[in-house]
Length: 66
Image (tube, rainbow, N blue to C red; front, side, top):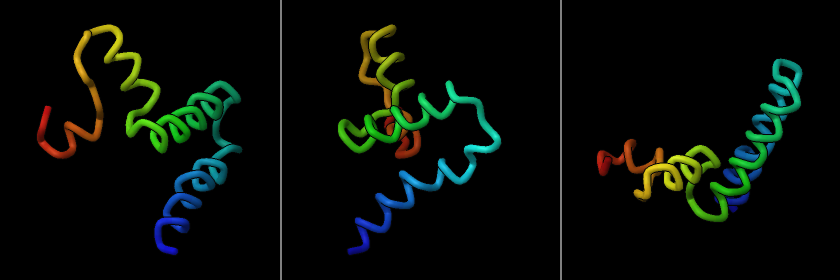
């Protein structure tokens, strides 16, 4: 039950800020939520991984694995 609430908050919290953002930011933000749930990496993480050839992830830096 707790994980469902966490996922719902992750998805719907950015929507609460929709009035403060442009449509492109909302699209990238929504895509990041979907890719984070699916692969554990954001859209930016995937772009950096592609550009550098390394396994880049913001979560790695939070854990100190960077």
